[in-house]
Image: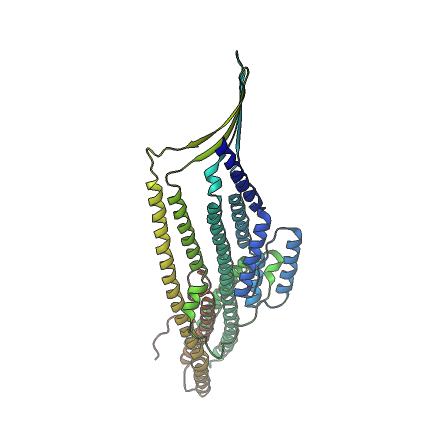
Length: 472
C-alpha cells in the first residue's frame, strides 16, 4: 500500500495537467482559420472569409455588390471566389473537424467505474474505479502526433484556397479572351454583311459575276457561323467563372473588361525560382509534416510494442461480516501470440513511404517550376511576336490587297482569301495573349502550391473559313 500511495500523486498530477491542456475546439478552429486567411492574403493579396453567421453573410454580400458593380478585374474575381466559393466554404469546415480531433487528443481517456452487489447469505458490494494508465502516460506523444495532423489539415485548406484562386484567375483570362474574340467575330460578321449587300447590288446591275457573288455570300455565311461559335464559347467561359465565384441570379450580369491586359514590358527571371518552390510549396510542407508525424509515430510504436494495454484500478469491497476491504489491480496484455513485430514493421514501412513521398514531391515541384517558366517565356515571345510583327504585317497586306482590288488588279476571290488570313491572325494574336496570361498565372502559383495541371487552356480556335481552293 505504500507504493500505491506514492503513485497516486503522480497520477493526479498527470490528470490535472491533461485537463488544463484540454481546450474548446471552436477557438482552436478560429485561430487556425486566421492563420489560413493570413497565408492566403500574403500569397494572393486576397483573404477568404468563413461564413458562419448572418453577419458574415451580410458582409460578403456587400463585398460582392462592390466588386460586381464595375468591370471585374482578375484580382476582383479572385477576391469574389475566396469570399463566396461554396466548395471552399465547405473546406473551412475541415478546420473544425481537425480542431475537434486535436482537442480530444489533449484529454485523457475517461475513467471507468463499476458497481456490483451480490445478495445472499452474506451481502457483497464491490466498487471499482479504473483508468487506462498507458493512454495517460503517452498522452503528450499522442497529442504531438495529432498536432502534426492538425498542421497538415491547415496546409491542405491553404492548398485548396490556392487552387480556387488559381482556377479563378485562369477562368477570368479565358472569359475575357473569349468575349474579346466574340466581339471581333461580330465586327467581322457586320463587315461581311455589308460587303455581301454591296455584292448583291453589283451582281444585279451586272458588275459582279455570279461566281464572285457566291464567294462573298459564303464568306458572309462563314462569318455568321463563326460569330455563333464565338458567342457560345464566351458564354461557357463566363459560366465557368461565375461558378468559381459562386454567383447566380442577378449577379450573373457582372461586367468584364472589353479586352485582355497589355503585355508587360519585361518578363520575370528564373533566378532562385526552384529554391523558392522547395521552401514555400505547400505540398512539400505537407509531405515534411507527414514525415515528421511518421517519425514520431514510429518512436511511439517502438516504445509500446510489448505493452498494448496497461490499466490501473482502485477496488473497494465491502462484505457483511468481514468489514471494508480496499486494494488495487493492474491489467496488462501478455505478448504470447502478438509480440508487436507486425506493428513495428508497419510503422517502419509507413515511415519509409513518407521519406520517398517527400523526395518525389520535391522532384516534381522542381520540374513543374522549370516547365512553368519555360512555358511562360515562350508564351510571352509568341504573343509579342504576333502583336509587333504578324498582325501589323497582315494589316499592311490587307491594305495593299484592297488597293489592288479597287484598281481591278486582283479578284474577289483573292481579296476574300486575304481577309480570311487576316481574321486568323487577329484571333491567333488574342489567343497568344490569353496563353501568356494563363502561363503567368501558372508561374505565379507553381511556387506556392500544386494547383493542378499547368499550361495554357485548350485551344479555342475558330476556323475563319473552309479550306481555300487553289487560286486560278
